[in-house]
Image (cartoon, rainbow, N blue to C red; front, top):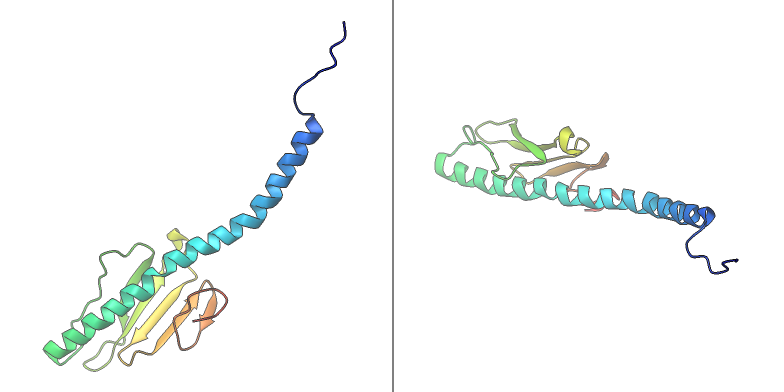
Length: 136
């Protein structure tokens, strides 16, 4: 007795599907990783803008920037510091944490609202970059 109705897939058909899935994953994964980094990078400009407002309020109360500290409570992907702090100047800096895969990111702003940034290795001269394409 011969059975002519066999069900299932051949090994070749399964391997073709696996190959197609691998190609699609190799295309989608880098785009997804860039999307996640962009979302994580949004933390720094938001916190620096907030710290800048706090610095100006501190200056209005004390007539100096000396003694002001920027400590965002929601800092997860960046470390924050104040450089060049004097009575009339400061530079707020956010540096990406390498352990969070944000090591190639940094953002700065000073008392004159002059901004610089490095977004995943791409340098932005006078603005905070919002993508690796170099656009502000």
